[in-house]
Image (cartoon, rainbow, N blue to C red; front, side, top):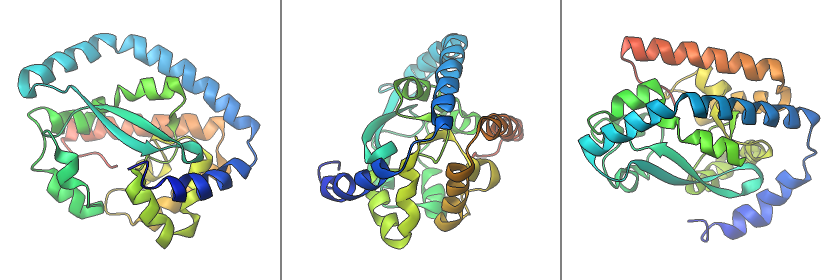
Amino acid sequence: MAGELEDTLVGGYRRLAAETPRRRIDLELRALDILFATIFGLLLLPVTALIALALLATSGRPVLYRGERVGRGARFFTMLKFRTLDRDAETRLGPYLGEELVRRTEVEYTRIGRWLKASQLDEIPQLWNVLRGDMSFVGPRPIRARFFAELTEDLPAYWQRLVVRPGLTGFAQVRRGYETSMAEKLAHDLEWIADRSVRLYLRTLVSTAFRVLGQTLGGGNRNA
């Protein structure tokens, strides 16, 4: 996939993202990313081990899902998650977005996959992505290259998501749900990019924590 879209993404959008001036706040947020990823990674080591063993026992290998995503500056990276869906589910779900994706995903969950998804524990391995600098705790959600190429045709401002690192959570996730149009989600993402600050970063993390707790206790599905 990366090879097929190399000319479009690297030749055009990578240059546009690179020409966008960096801000000092990005260095401050990167420092917070490293601090929090290190602390949470160490604290969650026992949970990580238990989840890995549970996945091996209930659905076998692979324990981790590895998906290619478009990151800051249109650079590709491998996003990690605990596997929540049956093997090769991404191939079957690949063409879908939004409500249709939600509906089709329901039949693909492994025995503990729905719970991992609702609790967001499936994203613990992304702490490694944060430490590597592929991702941040807060930012636009990472997207597959295929969908990025399609969305930039309909939403010309979509490339601006490449100015910052994709996030574990973001404005669009704490404010809206799957039913939200891609244009609305983009508006929230662009608001974060324009107004990003330490205060908004911390506030978004706290809002996410409360949202996930409510979804976990209430048995609901989280938003993507």
